Length: 619
Image (cartoon, rainbow, N blue to C red; front, side, top):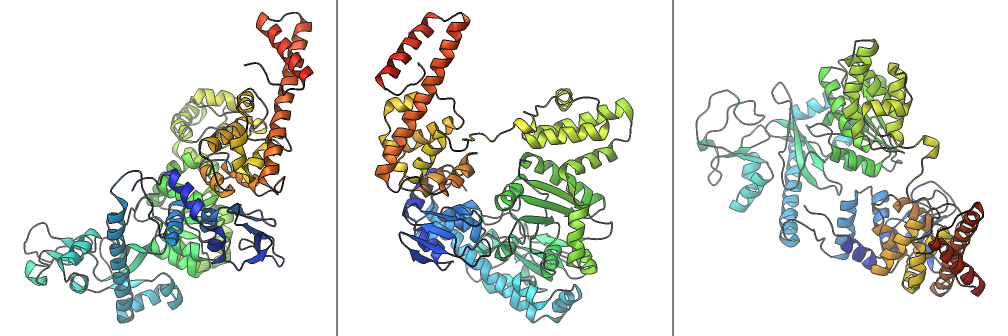
């Protein structure tokens, strides 16, 4: 599926009504030109949550929550960005275009029918569980309550080669969809089999051609005599299944194959259920099994999810950090669990950024989250997460210490050899510096962090105290004022004079590049609201900072006043820049040497000052 064009996001925000989006989920009350309510993101008795239809923007003066209609869907409904776009577009009755891939209309029509079929099959499995005592007894023995079974829509696939095929494959189109969804399998060639396992995940013989109903020859159900766990997307639609054997058999778990609906490398089991919890979502716990997730939720650990028969992928990490700033990976303490944790570590490194926390918890051998939370209870389990979960840097140190047993110079050389490719995957910045410093401390490298980084062949960036976010715009500056005016009244960008734009290119104030880029964008593509501006900058490093500024009170009440204020702010900014340049040149002249070009520049700046014109450094 291709990317959603940015131009469509612009159109979507222009057509959406944030009051309708928020008002369908929160009780809003009219207050002048805006609307107010008690904030849905924190507890309060006096309303501090305001929604502006003019700006297409919401802001809470209590907790600082802010954003657009899309931001609200992402935060309130806990949808990833693509699903939030789909949800908002669907409410407006407009299709979501893609920059690549097939035309959207047929794909959407086919996908809709496939989602509907998956819903019917999930309902069938759920009903089959209610009528099968053996399956119900198994879930009871595993300690699952009726409430948790219903919440996760757990079902049972009957012990039949063709029950799903018979019920849902009565037509050629139905059989084609069942194959496309991986619910039935087509035999490669007709043959008789004995008792040996032949079908994927089947514990008995593959059915003969004669055992399959007419019209479905050579087809048989993928899932047979298994507890069924529906896998749902962010909107709650069933996109795949995981099946677990009741007794002995291999594979223990059988997943749906990759389909047009299901890509296991980016989906997380239980994520939909996590989003449905009204508890504040600040972290996720990634475990290995379906039953682990279900039992943790039953024990009021409602932030557990699981990968789907695959290692944790970069796509998983990106989705996780779209939702929360903290993740803990919990695996069994055996050899397989340690290998899974190391793979998760390797894929986590590119996402190790400032403000994020990545932890690893290896459980005692023979235990898994399912059994441990039942044995210890919620409080003890969460205490274990807090005390035994190792930060990424500590986990790296521990693993390297176990892999490198040689001491002295040879051991440090081996540590450097293993650590180098790991550090190269960490983005340059604070996290990489901290990791290098921790390695130096743990393994006795007699070097500064910079020296160790040079030995390892990696860059670690500036010192922590000197680091700043790109595009930081300072507090109370003229640049900050200009940015706020543009955010609240983006139409004023079209009235900025060309000479002011040219002068801004020479301004060296903090945030000036951001101001210039914002002006250029708004002049090239005029925006109608604050919401449109923020969505354009969502993926850029400065986007979060602009959103915070947009939440501040407007400096002036109208676009006309904003136009005047913006022009004055730019004139003063250019004048200050010119004065500083003039002072610098005069100081250089007193020290004994100006070039002919610099003498001409002094003359020009002095004349401009005398005439009361805005000053800027010479081009």
